[in-house]
Image (cartoon, rainbow, N blue to C red; front, side, top):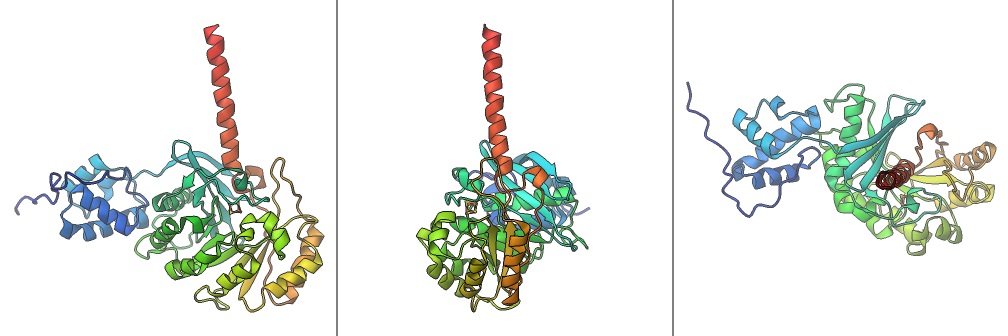
Length: 391
Ligand code: SF4
């Protein structure tokens, strides 16, 4: 018999330690290390414990401390008392007939965000994650733009959206062969470059080869055009860049994407050209939503080609997905095809995105709106029931 294991915890050591996170799931490696230190793990051990936890949480996807067989029984028991491995609650989960899945995730009371899994035709699939709840930018074609900003999501909350999708798809361990969730796109609710610190920390966790194993080249961050932050995004994350473009003239873009009034097309394209590492295998994706009679003429397709000159680019043409009372209609299919053909002839890939998940409100922000409406209706019903009970 060896000596009984000496405890590695000294919970009396840091009376001033900050509040511990409730759940460890989704925390970055530095945050796991800090949580262990604040919890009372000896400083010399925190790095090793954080790495062990990373493997269990983000590679294996475990939901129980009891599974963590390389941690002592004593430590596992102590961790169980102090932390959970919970993901945020799922308020709603919808599956479309075309395989698209949408989760409405409740991060905290009144803080709900959406993520959407979009299976591709080939053996890849992307999860579109939110970086903020609501948005400040008010793009006129975007449903989220009608919702005021609630707050930035933390890095942990961003990563937890991927964990929820991986739970749902049954894709643990992270390195599983033939997995369906291969790519991450920051194209859900919010402007990621207004939450760059948390987005960068989340990308570190998602791309960690000992953890979630999603390569940086498979992570795309989409911005409406916060020009000064664009080169910084590339330098800090190495992620792929996408631009929510939607118009090729400043007067129209001022209207569709109002941040253009602050950072016009010239400023935006200077920032894009400064994005580190651009070449033909690391191209910028330009998102262009097709709005009937607004931005879909052949002249605009030719202007788009001129604007893109010298930028390794791919253009995603997105048929507009209308929501109730939206001010726009989707361009006719033949108009979209004619637009694509002009861009294509100029040498740019310009796939037309297949509309997905229309039966489950897959337009960004729609599920959250439905939930807000529903809870308002529920509150009204409760108030009426209360009144009836009192009368
Ligand atoms: S398109 Fe993006 S940046 Fe614009 S309002 Fe919608 S969520 Fe915000």
